Length: 87
Image (cartoon, rainbow, N blue to C red; front, side, top):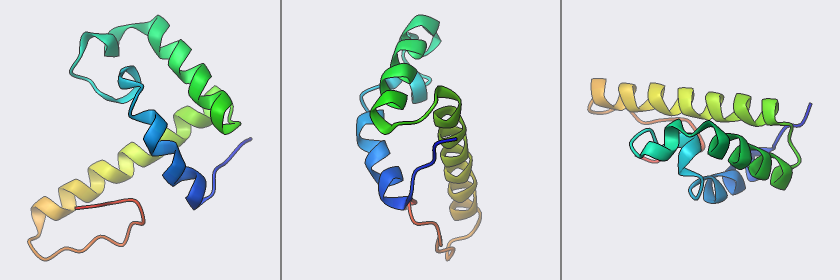
């Protein structure tokens, strides 16, 4: 099972931006399964991860982000302790 350290996770975000089909639910390309498979293969190969490990990483990062956004909205003085969260 491949994993990324904190530096690798930070490096993961920049190329992920170019693969809208993996994270942005607004454009029609998000529903294109072929594009998603191609993007997943390309991104996982770039970081030496299996596609399954990459999906787990993205799910974990997305879940953490949603949780942190909710906490910041619920409390005016909440300060995140997460390394990758920028408010």
